[in-house]
Length: 399
Image 1 (cartoon, rainbow, N blue to C red):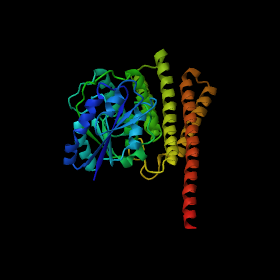
Image 2 (cartoon, helix red, strand yellow):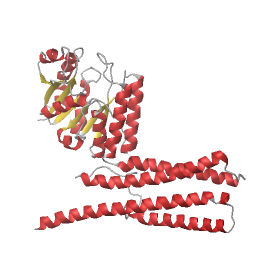
Image 3 (cartoon, rainbow, N blue to C red):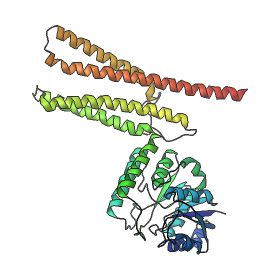
Image 4 (cartoon, one colour):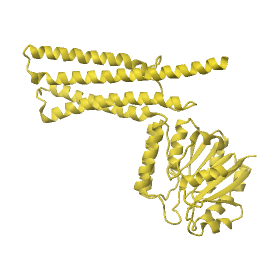
C-alpha cells in the first residue's frame, strides 16, 4: 500500500484553507487510480492570528499541527514532513494558487521512477502569475539550470511530491520561503532524479506574503551558497573563464589595432590593457580557487555529488589540479624571461615607454604562476590527506 502525505503550511489563511483542504481530500479516488491507496492531509498552522486553526480543525480528514510561534514557511513544512507517515510526501500552499487535482499526475511520475516531481508553473500551462513574479521565476530557473547543469523551468514551485527517503539527501532546508529553491538546488547536486509536470497557476486568495525584492534576494543568496557547498568550481570557474575570455578579447582588439596601423595606445588603450591584465589575473585566481574548493568540499560529502565545471574532465587521464604545477612553473619562467629581456633592452638604451607593457606583462605572468604553484601544493596536500584517510580505514578493517 502506498500513501501520499500532503502537507499544507498555513499562516493567517482563513480565506482559503477550507477550500484547498477539501480539494485535496477530494482527490482520493483519482490517487487510487494511479496506485496511491492512502491519503494523509496535514495542515501545519504557523502561529496564525486569525481563524485558520478553527476552520482547519472543523474539517474532517485534516490532521492539524500547531506552532505556538511563527517559524516560517519552511519551518512549517519541515514540521509536516517530520510528522507525515506516507511513503510519498507532497506539499502545496494554502492560498489556492496550486491545483491539488494534479497530485495524481505528480505521483504517477514518482511511481515510474522519479524521486522528486515539481509542479511547474512555467512549463506552458495556464497561469495567472503576476508579471514581476513570472520574470523572477524565469530568472531563478535559468540561473539554477546554468549553475546546476540541468534544465529546470520552475526552481521555486511550491507544489511537489517526493519520496520520503530523499529527505536525508536534501536536508538541511531553511525555515523561510527559500526552502523550495534550496531543495531544488540540493536535489540536482545530490543526483536526485527530478521530473517536472506542467500545472496551471491561479490568483491567490488573500494578501500575498511574498516580497519580490526581499525574498528574491534571499532566493539568490540561498541558491548561490548552496551551490558553493557542492560545486564551487561551477561558479568560480565560470567567472574565471569569463575573466580570461575578456582579457583575450581585449588582447585581440589590441592586435587588430596594431595591424591596422595604430601604434599609440592612448587613454582608452591604457585602460583596456590594465583591464585585461586584471581580468586575466583575477580569472586565473578564481578558476584555481574553484578547483581547490571543489576538492575541499568532497572531503565533507560521504557520497557522490554532482561536481565539475563542464560535466566531464578537461584532461582525461589526470585531474586538472595535477597540471597546476607545471602550468605555474611555465608561467613564472615566461614572466622572468620577459622581465630579464625587457631590462636588458632598457639598459641597452631602449626607451622605457616601449618596454613598460612587457614589464607589466612579465609581472602578471610571474604572479599568476606563483598562485598556480601555491594552489598545486595545497591540492596535493589535501589529496595526500584524503589518501591517508582511505588507507587508514582500509588497514583498520583488515585488523
